[in-house]
Image (cartoon, rainbow, N blue to C red; front, side, top):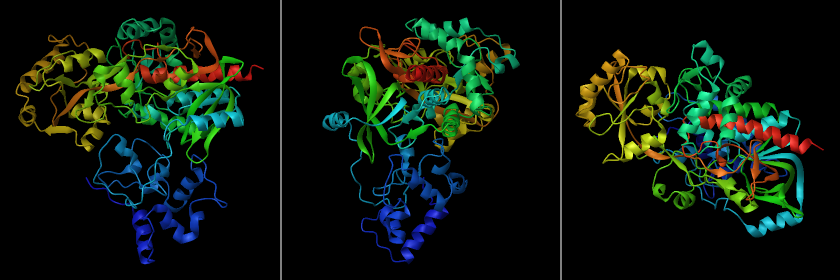
Length: 589
C-alpha cells in the first residue's frame, strides 16, 4: 500500500525545490532552517522542552490541525489513526529520518515520508546511565512537587487527574513521544456492575457475581480484597469516565462473565482510543503538567529511611538527567509484555510468542520498584490472548466473539465455547495441530461492531458472498455444515455442541467473513504488590511510604488470568485510588 503526501507536504517540498534548497543532510530541520533559520521551529534563544511543545505548535500553525490534514481518499491516512492527535514530532523528526509510529504495530514499509533520507542520529533513550543518575541525585532536586505520576496511560491519567482535583501539585511523566500507553490499544470495554446501562436494558447483575467471575477467571489466585474494590467501585468508574466526556453506552459480554457487563462506546468503536482521547482532554483542562519524552530512571529513597520514596530521577530527551523531589510517587507504567528478556525469564514457554502490546510495555516500573526494594506478586503469570491476527500484532477484540462470531479450526469445525476465558481459549487453539484458528461472522456483526472494518482495512479479512464460497476460499471444508448447525442452535436457543449461552447473531446475511487468529502475549497479571490503599509493599509486606501503584504494573487484581473488560476497570478504579491516596499523603502536613 502506498502513502500519499498531504497537500501541505507536497506544497512544502515543491517550494523547497523551486527555491533550489539543497539540504545538507536532507533533513526536515535543514529544510526549515533555509527559510527563517532555526527559529522557524524553535524559540529564540533556542530552548526545546522534552515534550517539544513549541515545535509541535509551530507545525500546526503552518500545516493545520490533524482534522485539516485528514484525507478520506487515502488508503492509509496516519492523521486519522486510533493514536489520536499525537505530537507531530512523534513521526516527523527534525534531525533524524522520520518514522511512522504506526509501524510499531503495523508494516507500512513501502510508504515514504518527506525527508526519509535524512541522516539518522542515535536515539536519546539508551536506558539507564548509573553515573548520570548518581550525579543528578548528588546535585539535588531541580524542582519540587506534591505528586509525581509515572506513565501516561489510563491508570496514569486517572491518577494524575484525581490527585490534581484533590488539591495536589502534579507532574505526569511519560517516556514515549505521545501519551496513551497500552490503554490506547484496548479494544473491548470496561466491566462494571449496577450501572445505568444495565438497568436500562433490564440486566440483573450483582457485585458478588462480578467478584466471583473475576476470582474464578483468575483461578482463585487473586487478592480477594482488591477484587472486592474492583467490583464495588466499577459502576462509579463508568460514571467517572462519563463525567469527563466518555460515551459508555454500548454493552456487551466478554468471556468469563455471566451477564452483559462490558461497557464501551456506542456504535461498536474501540474503547481504548476513545477513553485516552477523553483523558488527554481532561488532563489538559485540569492543567496537569504532562511531560513527554521523559523517562523515570530512578526512585530516590530517603537516606535515613530506605522505606520512604522522596523523588525520582528523570532522563529527558533534551534536558538530560535531573531529579524531582516529591512527597508521593505513583507507578502507572504498565506491564512487561513487550520486554522479550523478561518474558523469557518469567514465562519461557511464551518467549517466541507475538505480542499485542504497545512498544512502551517494557516493565520499567517493575524494574524501578524491584530496585527500590518492592515486593512482587504473581510476577510470572502472563496472559495469552487467543485472538491476535495471525502473523501480526493486531488484537482481534474478544467482543467480536461476544457479539456473535464463531471460532473454528482450519477445517471449519468449532472446537470450544467461544465465550470461555482467554486462557482456556488460547490452550484450545494451541492444542490444534496448526496452532491457529479462524473467526467467522457475517455482515450483521460488522454493522454492530465498526472496529471490524479496521481489520478489513488492514487486509486481514477473507470475504465471500456465501458460506460455501468462503469455505472454498479458506479451505474450510466443514464450514457450511458448522454454520448450519450453529444457526440451528441459535434459533432454538441452545448450543448443543459446546454450551454457549449467548448467541446474539446468526450467521446468514452476506457477505461472510473470516479472519485468522492465534494466541499472543496480551497482559502480564503479576507485578508490584499493593494493598487496598494502592500503597506499594516492600519485601516485608510493609507499605513503602510515599510510593503508590495502579494498573498493569501491579499484581494481585487478576490472579493467574484476567477477564476481558477488567483491565480498563483496573486502570480507572485503582488509578483514581492511587492518585487520591498519593495526594492525601502529600498534603497531610
